[in-house]
View (tube, helix red, strand yellow):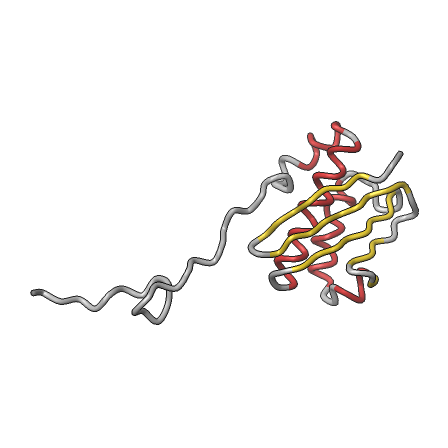
Length: 128
């Protein structure tokens, strides 16, 4: 098996994932997973597609991620890993799709409007 390359996005974070046969090492921006994502919740999010397909020890994963915050980056990595697993074995789709892991979350921050403090603050009401 050669290396599989996939991209995942969430908010403004973009993750490029390279999956190859290996022993379960996950490297993010040339750092260990536990070193880059310090909270157990974010580590779980990244490992979730691997645990559901029972491939935690099967593949080495190298990730380049930029943009956004840590949560957005973790979810972008999760989407990219999920897409790579489906590309490797189409049968994984039946397990991952019901969990909602193949869906790209389209929600983005709404831009600030001119003359306003925030994006959704109403304009000053005037009767005339």
